[in-house]
Length: 156
Image (cartoon, rainbow, N blue to C red; front, side, top):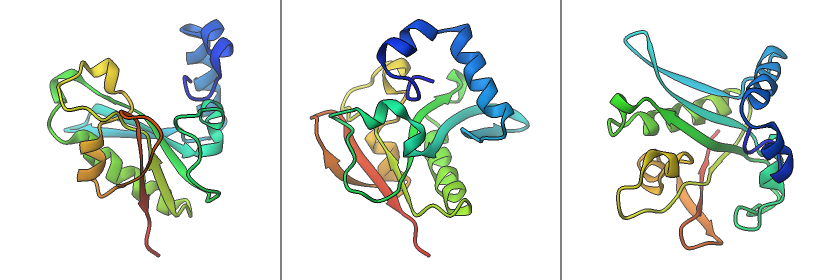
């Protein structure tokens, strides 16, 4: 819910309230992301929805829209600790592209961190630039030294 609520609204709703908000969105039939399974076990998750589903992005100076095209945004990942550094994030990105294509979307956008050093997982929840590159995304903008904007344009 971090990307769906701005500032004070998120701060006031953290924890149980945001989990309930997210549950109500899911219960309404909206798919907010995809799960990754390995041998029947959930090992990861990616959030992907149309950009306009994310209120915080609408007001971000660093992650402002590149142009006026409709895009789907990849905003968050989670990979279980014992499954990290095994390419699951890259596979989640590829699955996100397939999902967006199946929904009629044409552009998938992400907002990873650019890092040269290992960073603790909590700081790379939006993914890394290297994972986006491995999944076939290309950098299209950079309004901050460490926050590039990557896109994957789906071919018809």
